[in-house]
Image (cartoon, rainbow, N blue to C red):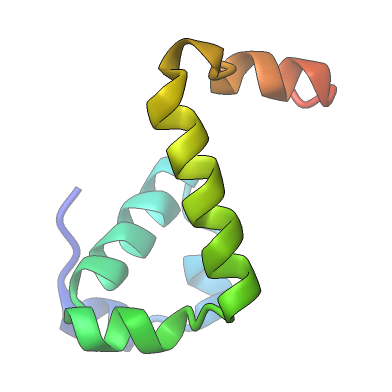
Length: 81
């Protein structure tokens, strides 16, 4: 779904939160995609410990991609789906 920025800007947040889940997700993605790389990096600052942990996990995945657990299985294990 395409969003018209001027229409969204005039829509109260409470109305936006009432959109169907798929439309809220599309809006969130559109907003994220509208940011440049610098803004994205600033929006999610990572400390060195978190960067190290992400690097460790990425390396572990590259060494054993078959060890990954499907998202559906994780949700099921957590009782979310």
